[in-house]
Image 1 (spheres, rainbow, N blue to C red):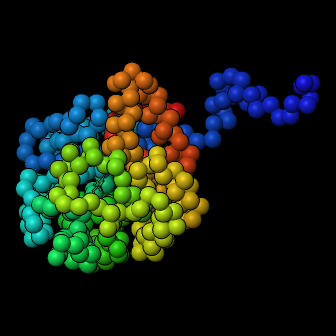
Image 2 (image 1 turned 60 degrees about the horizontal axis):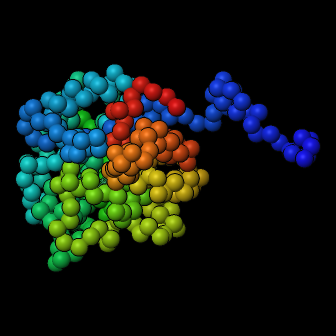
Image 3 (image 1 turned 135 degrees about the vertical axis):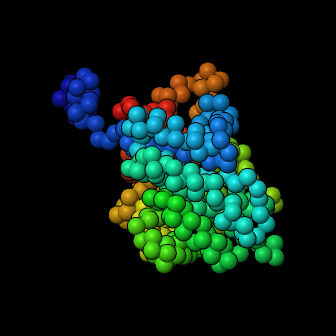
Length: 325
Ligand code: PBG
């Protein structure tokens, strides 16, 4: 075949590193990553639930050391999950359960006021049955759960959270949280809502770290069915209408199509969550000698940025600090 018949030659724009860098359409920088931590009561407590898998349980003092590391590495922010030291059946001891994590939030804000701080707002690690809402008559009760979640959001807001992140998937939670925050004079606290949260098998390592596995049944009466794209778009629309400031989509890698849909359907900032099982998959494959963990992880994170994510919550954030790709 004659060269002129070959048509466009895409390889011209790939011919050396400078050209490739100039034409790169999106990037992954450490500022695009948010590191989650599991906050526990006590002092001097620091445990990676499974070595190399990035699920860190920390007491408040240890969290401060991590903050320094995140700042040094230019990581974009951190997300806290409170793991209370005791469970409660009905939400009546919520404030007591929240106190250690509130102290951790206050400390973080005192030592690193400009490090964006997200705090997960959900009941699963607080309740003895491990569901994300209150249970009444064997069922997850939507509206009484909203009251409890709103109380929690106000508690995190008062402690100094920049964002509360409702991950419970009750209907109407974004509006309930917004009203409660505004009513408590916390109108500056923003809401990062989980607009797409699939009922997924990729959350198992998280549930070990958060001690939040459901004691009966599963989460399919509130988390979204993997098969349903239109339904996911309705969740996105509703969260926008209810006043979310930014939307989160998870698991990230198996929902890149919905990330792209969301990017086209609204103008809110979008966040991908590379969940515990996604990272575990990569780590386990690397441990088996099948792939290069860092390269594979960067590739998946970059694909989330390409799909439309402004930034990504990832257990690997603290490892990637400083690098760009
Ligand atoms: C709590 C919550 C879960 C995750 C984030 N918030 C677990 C669940 O729904 O059971 C999962 C995150 C991960 O796997 O990293 N509702």
